[in-house]
Length: 308
Image (cartoon, rainbow, N blue to C red; front, side, top):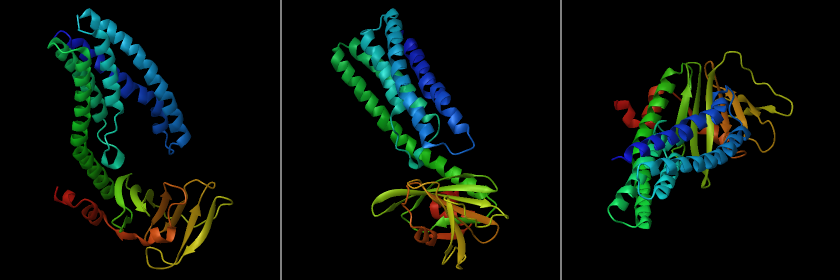
């Protein structure tokens, strides 16, 4: 048991640095901005994150080996490197969650569990008389089991979180709601307030995965207006009200995602932004939309949620 204390302290320190402090330092200013993060900003943060993690892992491995050696831990070099490697893998391992995200504590918990259980399994295996190579193999097996177990447990947690976020957002919004009627399109996220809501959809066209972001906003003053080299006004033969309506198609430059904006019945404007450039047929996608309310949208997308 004497080895457990340094292993827990080392793992907790690594998880706190790499799983909480470092992402906040690199991504905090980007995510805190009111404007949507640019791909270049996220790429720059990732480029900084990778070498920082590598250099930090080398330093922490040296520290772990030195500290574990004071506690008479068998094979301190192997255990120290395994501790750091397992914790980093636990923090970085993709959990394949619906909607792309889950509870914020899942990754740190997986990192901490990996950083504790993997080196402890190696220590126990060596003390039981196994060779260091066999003990390392058992450590790898423990890490694989942990990742698989967390994926299994995390999926229902992420689904409940997703349903709760969508339900809260759509019921809070005071304007006119819409939904995509095509079953091949799934609602993967919703966020907003009483005056504005953003619905994120994933779908497929000709076997290719694409997405669309639908923003609904209460706005009495909006009128279709063209902007030179950026936006053009055209008429849709059939809007959501069933009548011809004017829409604005905006694209800052070729090769970037475009946005279609139009007014729907009432005081709400609808903006549709494609996530992949030139992937949406605007007339076809608008034809998939229908007016709805919060209860109908939740019942269609998450039938079980209406019972709770």
